[in-house]
Image (tube, rainbow, N blue to C red; front, side, top):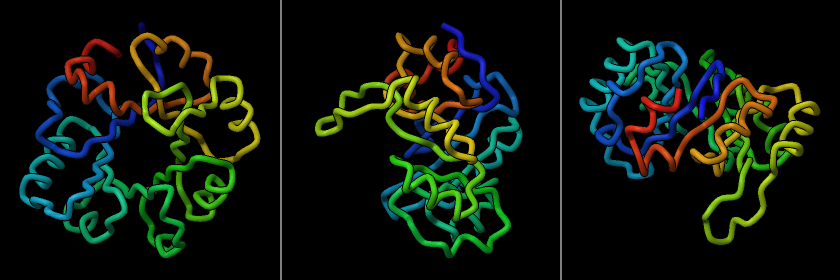
Length: 187
């Protein structure tokens, strides 16, 4: 039931849904805020950012450099469809996401510190049947220089398999949306 890593990443779409009081480990959590709706409430985001700062939680903004500057976030998240090299000159911490080795190389060119590599385990999504598994993920990790972070299909029942993965972090997404209180029990 326990998996100890150096970093844990959480995707959120809404700041209201995540209770920061449930996070007990300081300095290990990174929250990636990706709002697909363009109606950002800056004041609410700024308050959430300050609460993250007090708890030593790093806060990343997805694909929006202006919002990143306004909120003074810890870093920038560059999604897999964003192939632009315009973020290369900015001296900020960058995290990227990728689905194959070509996208991994693009993220390394963009200067990403860590790369979130998706579908480690089988997921419930329609049209998304392929997944890597622990062995293939470890092989891809050895081939690439960037630090890869697994994402996809990580549930409570396969959490122990993450101890075999050659990564010092992992990403939780849907499990936190289903059961927000799981954060306090997992780690």
